[in-house]
Length: 344
Image (cartoon, rainbow, N blue to C red; front, side, top):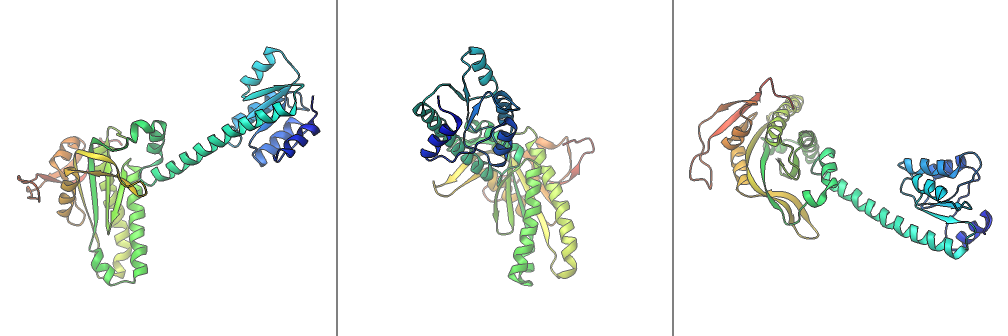
């Protein structure tokens, strides 16, 4: 059978970079400092034995996906079972020849490469999803992407949310472009984070406006109430920022918010190269029309939205409004707060 030096020579001749450790403890030090793509591990080692080393490797986030091949002269099924139970992916029985070893190594490295590619794609998908939803919802989506990310879209009951910064155009005329962008980004950063904290899905920025929706791709059961909570928190956050900039400008900024609940088509819209996870339909148009009637500090919601959260919010019924595309006037409410018993 091949000794350690001969094994190393064969691996290096095949183009592999090899690290060698003469004890279990040293093997772990090397593996954690420079994570390997594959580990050839003798069961009998100085200090910690191969089974223990393998368990430590598989328990670490750094090395758990590195294939481990246990090398042993022990032929009993008990030893092979212990190797598998410790997390080994394969084993070689001494004596073995170089061809057998290199074949096993290539096969396991091919599997490792496919796993790394999948992990890279999942990492990219996670980063993309985190642009629209919070980490908790991302975890739910990735646990069953076929369920939550249907291509072509689907009809879902959702609550659509529009928030518009009022007076921003006039304010921008008084300030340098760099200052305008800085302030706008400051507003958007704070307001968008509130959407995520309330389990909403960010849709897009349109000028000085934010669009979001609640209820897709994952429904929480409290989506409409979460949308109202986000609106209330946004108004508070906006007022704090407004108070800081008010002494430096003659133009007052305000925030008007509108919400509407109903069925809408949700999915990826665009092309193979450029797409956006968004929502379309009359529910969106109605939410926008309602938002356009919201003055500074107001949170206007439709009757459909009010019906879903009326037990949990304080709101004042306003005069019905006529909006484009609707034959009958819309009943709307101005939200003033949450009732004291609400827990979210």
